[in-house]
Image (tube, rainbow, N blue to C red; front, side):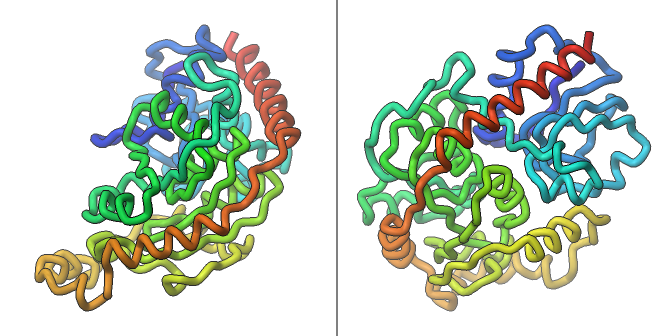
Length: 322
C-alpha cells in the first residue's frame, strides 16, 4: 500500500514524521500501489486520496476535511487519534488509541528517552512563523524559538532535550508529552483547532486548557481571525466545544465571503498592528508568564500503554496486508 499524508510546499515536522516512522515499524507493507493507501499521522480524515480507493486509516484525526469526500471509498479504520474522531465517525471507543507520534521514541533515528533539561522552547504553529516578530520575542524572553518546519529528526531531538515547551504546534505538545517534558499550549489566532488538540489530549486521559497569547504582529489575525477568547485568558476546552468545531469543519466547505476577501486589503494598509496593539514586547510578556504555568507530562505508564496498544493494532494491520 502507498504511504500517504499531508505534504505542503512548506515542511512541517509533524506531517513529515510519517515518512520516518511507519517504514521503521512495517517496511514490508509499503509500495507504490495505485489502489490501496496507508493514511497515517495528521488531521486528514477526508483529505484527497486519488487515485487510491482502499484506505487503511491508522492514528489519523478528523477535523480539516469534509467526511463526504470519502463516502464512496473502501475505508478501514484501524485506529484514530482520539475519542472525538471515533465519535464523529461512529466507531467504537476501542478505535480511539492516540496520535501515531507516540511511537517516536521506539523508532530508529530518534531519542529513545528524554535527553536533558536545557532551555525553554517556544514552538509557534508553522503558519504563524510566516508573520514577523518571533525572533524578537525570543530575544526579549531569552527563550529558544524552535521552527516546526525543520526535519522531524532535528526538531524532535531538540524537544527531547528541553526543560519545558510552550507550543502552538500540536505535535510540539505530543512529542513533549511523550518524552515526559512539561509543556503548555498557546494560541495566537483563529487558526488554532481546539478539536484536534482535545481529541489527542483525551486519548492520554488529560484535560486541556488553552492559553490565548497576543501574536507579535496582526498579520495572522487578518488571515485567520482572532482566537475564540480574549488575549490573556485561559480556557478549559470541553467536549461540547470541540465536537461543535469538528462537526463544522468536517461539513461541506463554504466559499469565501466578501468579509474574508477584504482582510487582505486591511492588512496592506499597515495600520492594523497599531489598531490591535500587537507587538513582540506584548507577546514576550505573555510567554514569560506562560512559562510559569507549564503542566506535567502524562505519566510514563500512560505513554507505554498507548504504545503497546498501537503496536498491537499495527501488527493486526500488517497481518491483514499479507
